Length: 488
Image (cartoon, rainbow, N blue to C red; front, side):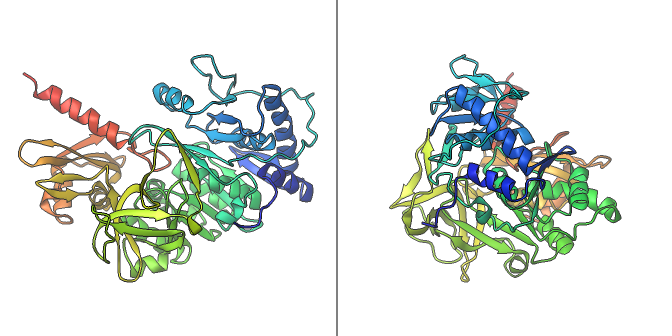
């Protein structure tokens, strides 16, 4: 157990005491200083107390990326509560389902439709007359509780076992004076960890929503040194940058990390060429934080396709009988935290475990040098004529096409082969492609049985800004349409 630091709420107050006029957060051209952040969250924390929020209570935060989102999180810590972010556009059924998993003292940004949980509106502003003096120090028993699983199964909460006396800046190796850019939703674990860590180390720049030109402008204007994003965003950035490279300066970036989904090799190589092999990093793990791998761009060039070697906790690959797979043999990835200390608690679900090792459902293999390679999630894999097919492999090949912006592959029923690949693709503006051109492109890159039998063109991104896709829901919708079309 590392040495405990002051609670996160107190860490914010200490920043204000050391450098009150230093910028804390910038969002949409508005900047608040560390002193303003501390005072405003003291005032908001008192509002929470007036609503009955206390130590250990859940405060559900349903706000977009914003200064107000972070104020709500910090105010929760200052009264010893547990911040529990949810995506603002979460469907009502999922929203209500998640609220039902655990008692909540307050919902911020969205009303409980049943009228049972007190709430504050999205545009709530505390009474300026309310005191902004420091509050007694409080420790939240869990520093965060994240929602997960709505796209692949029953929604669940992943509650951190670390209390709020934790060094979040240390988690991401943020350095004092860093300027961190957040381009992914802070309602996801990666966004929240990097936002909090970046805030506690220096100046945090928050994007309410991702826009490639604005991302590049912010990096240039604020001399961003640290950022974490997802492959979907990396893919969308490249054509905008290359259309006018002289307009942007990326030389300030010390560390550019991607996480959350497999990165197509062509996208990865393009960013290595752009930033340098020791600036680009990839992490693989989960919101549960049991274990992580890491790989630099330089290592990746020697081990293409790998997500790195284990740097935190332990991982192993097991076959269906529970036996450990030798190097090069694919199986299901299991992991456990250092010294066996629990890093999370599931609420609404149970972990898949074998003898104290947890699985997140990912498939992959280690090579003889200890580098891990991912295939896909077990739930996403499908079989074509008894041969396993992983959507990520097909999507990676599709992403090599210069005219494609976004893609998603699922397996759909087939009378002859059991299942066959079905691809959804979004084409870049002005590009002209048909299904024959796409399948011809793929036949040069993957085995014939992996080439989608159908290519459907769509006009919107297929993944959100966190790189997540509702693959199960998409598959169900496609199958329903195919069934309806087949009826007499």
